[in-house]
Length: 220
DNA sequence: GACCAGGCACATC
DNA sequence: GATGTGCATGGT
Image 1: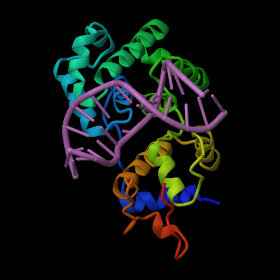
Image 2: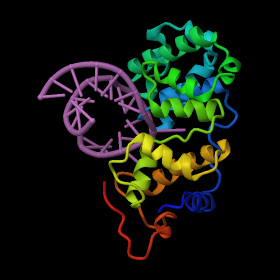
Image 3: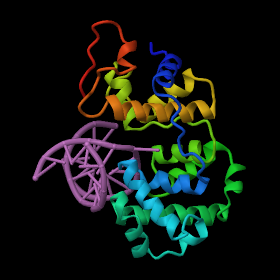
């Protein structure tokens, strides 16, 4: 049985706090969550920098930008036409459902918010949970490619484990703590970048160190 | 020049 | 329900 708390402590000791989405507005976090889908964060930052330079990191401003123009501004984030459409879908949702008020969203319960977010075309489980955790401070564990791969590689879950199962694993074995979920997810992405890419770099991996002697990390 | 990255929706079987 | 495919840029 995986001791997630120990995994967390190991990662934090080895890698330190990741300080994810520091000093950014909830709205900016939402935009980032949409743009980062299946994309390197470096490319997303270029796109967000463009939006910031144009003064477009607010709902009202961004809603007024024509589709073609928005697509060009976020080109660096990849899938730019698709993401322009999906971003507009989210913006219209925020406007229609909450009159653009983050405060109004904060007053809604987490389950309802998650259902509503998932109803937006372009928002899937990870994007919804990223928004809930990183923009709205809800104790919702975010499961992404690295969460799945890192746990599976070290034999803690099966490769066929689905999103909900992995999320429950975290939420059931950890205390409900926004800061903990925030940091843990960021650490999993970081350790994934460093040691658990498609071609594993297991040497010096803090998680491989936790495994029994002679344990072989399984390939994908 | 191939390979990869903090997904998601949709088509087809 | 499972499996396959399109979407696209920029870094390694």
